[in-house]
Length: 448
Image (cartoon, rainbow, N blue to C red; front, side):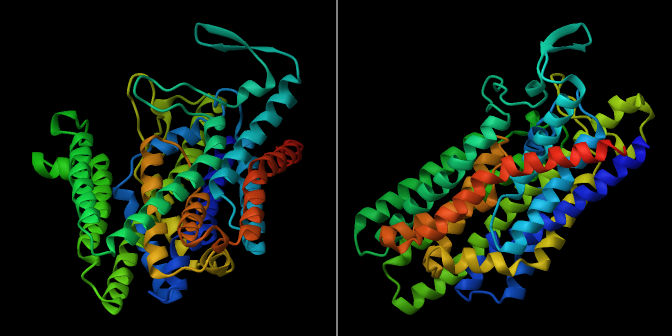
């Protein structure tokens, strides 16, 4: 029974990943479709390709954060099943209504809501005792969820409260970054030496910063190649920073020649730049959102080990999952990330045209100029939040980025009525998903 439940959860998690792909396809392709850089079909193929390519770029930090949303020693597989079902229902509903809500927050809200429902069903509202090896501590129903965990030295804190904070922070970061990129591009179009000096300074600063973030060969735990150079170049952590440098240096190079181009030439260059920026955002989308499903599958395997009493050594090889711990031990079979990245890429190929319309035209009128600024800002925001292992919403991020470029024209260029409606969807996603998951948990518990 337990093993069957585990298989059902894995299948449903991959279905959710597929739905996530077509639900969030609009995030990456709305602006390139709206500006007619690519046809809708070309855009989804482009985005899907880079969704899958993220497999070789990103690690498993976000997956670890999602897996630890709830205490896996205190829940059962029905909790995870209820959370995934609730996330699928809310995602399909918002897609049907054309609402660009967050698939990430749907999944986390569902997981947390079902975990709380389970704790209340088992322990009520009274305090109870948790025994973990030699450690004994008192807990309440709300302690089942990891609300906040301080980070180790030099690392970022984690927990549901941090994720909730980024409901506000992610779009704000996207807005600020896209606004600054837009101002930078606007000034670069002028025939003045000062924007060029600023651009050159930024290029030097970028090279210095990215070089300081590189992991050297002796720091790589599992080198991919015998060659020191290729092992360093293809280390996933390093690839991500190479991409950050490539994005910033590409835009910087364009800024250096922008003022010498006529209107037709600058429009042609901006369309080429938009291909780069949409690819960068699709890469961030794949890396961020696929990891959330990896985290759910990893949590399900961990719960299965705990509730079934099976020894880790007795697990079949394809289920040999160990979440990162204090000893630095971590394992995840290759099929899990491959399946997750394949599912989200396949979902993106299916498109999501209702949300494309909202993201590409209803918030503000988007040109190639705005598209480059918004997608670049969104991509950089996703890369930096992934670096800090924070699962953020790609929907919130790109929406904030589109708002930022709209504000460079004038504040009234942003259709704030549409934006306020989106904000309501963002705020309500976690509590509605949590409540829905709790109800589904109680219904499933009658039969399972």
